[in-house]
Image (cartoon, rainbow, N blue to C red; front, side, top):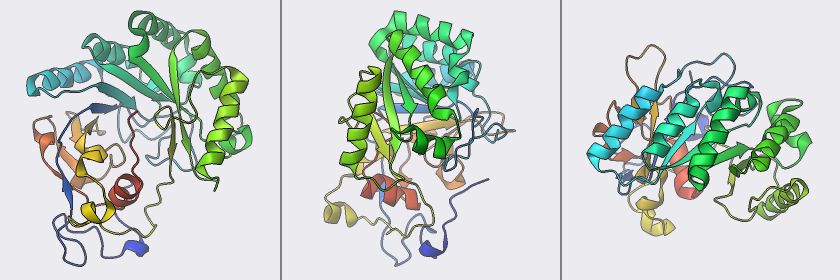
Length: 317
């Protein structure tokens, strides 16, 4: 299974959590303001995308289904630790493959949190039980529930190039159902095809207008454009001096404001990892409890540099 081993371009880098390859002090990030607790619902997915960073597929159960009771246990830990969370977020795999998805979302909403669910809006979401559950959640909690739909590209041809023939039409069907039932949507796209950001956002704006989707193509929180995550690309290591050089703040990185809970195949209990982007890297596993997960995170992976510090991206909204 994929881990944090780097490719030839970064040979010798990202090895020591305390020091860079040049011997400089590596930057680390404290959990300064926890805002989002992520739950990976399991890596099983109804499709297999060409560039899925977590290798989700109909056969990958490296991360198994997390349960409603396990989610409720962590919600209790949030209260006990006094984390000032705004949001509970669910990702996969495809979250609606997990039969307890509606119950997990309800538990988080009942606890007073906003809920974000990342989904491809395809057949798993459109099953009768899931649609009934979503309608109930939407009716009761309204604006506190958001589904972020994976639309890799605003055009059918390029979206299907990534996700397989017919994927765009099935996702569009799900989005139209969500639109018609007043369930709030945002979109996650990708920047794989060399378009400028302006071109991409204009394309999404036209797509939304064509189908009557109330999504802002020009709001980075409503239409999130993720860069390609190539672990073999050469990237610089982030030292403590980089914050001032880059005019960046540690508090703006994902690991300053979020953690993710995963359950590995064969494990007795879930574990907490530092980042949604590194579910398989053992050095980013912080322990089984939120108390253990409060420790600082060393920026010891290419994704830390390219995606979070240099790219300024965030998986939340």
